[in-house]
Length: 365
Image (tube, rainbow, N blue to C red; front, top):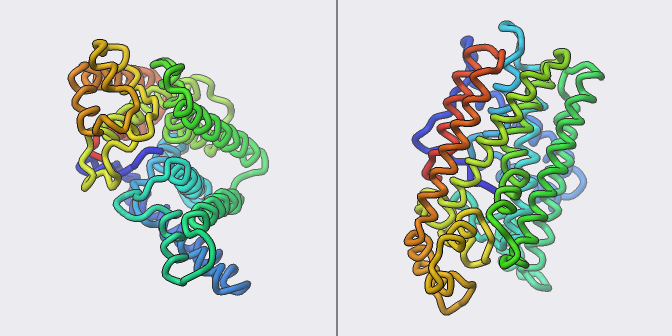
């Protein structure tokens, strides 16, 4: 999953004199998690420590893209004086779902760091070693991280249920949310499958993975989720515009992540460069490079411990694939913005979403 730090591109906060969307989301999460920690602490101190690790991961960084897109999806149709508080639990719950996805993704990819800090499975493995426990530390770390991710997904359901919505609206919101979760799991499975048969993969299939693994639950479905939170009658024109904008901008977001995974500065991205190349993940960048490569370049791009990661990155650059990916990003952002221009939404939401499209797809991390 993508690293969401948008250094140098501030995300717009809500207007109308409020203290800021991100502060509201952080506060909602912190209050909810404090209650959950107290409940588990009362059962056993070890469970309280487990819950605190989850809290630290949830509150440990990121720009809250999913709640932000959900907010602007809602604000695009909500009455100007509509208060934020009734929907805050629902949009904050998306961050708990995101933590679930990140923790499980890091276990699958065996990633050591996320946002410049140890990943959940490495945190738990370190605790195992420090306490001198029996058994394999790495196995304990992975098992505990999976449970932590599962807990965050349950917490997301609990927090969402606290939203002050009518029963009809809540059912509609849950339908959006459930579709988002299914698509996230589907995209992740395709991503894992691609690593096992990279020779059978294609650029088209890599873009399909980007659409389901990232675009769906980062931009597209959160926007539609926000629209549904408004409780308004069906607005097919806006829903279609959000779907088009979200799919295209979300794919561009993942394409940028593919580039950063190879050429990004680890001090900025918080993750080692070249992880995708080490595992042979068939990203759109690698698929394009193979399509454009000469026979000699193709031989160097074959998965082999004999070819250093830095050399593979050089070969990919020499094929011209990074420039092609940049062109794909620009085209998708343009198409997303075109869909947004025709949508009958409030002007402040259109402005914010236009800014987000640029900020989310042109970032150093």
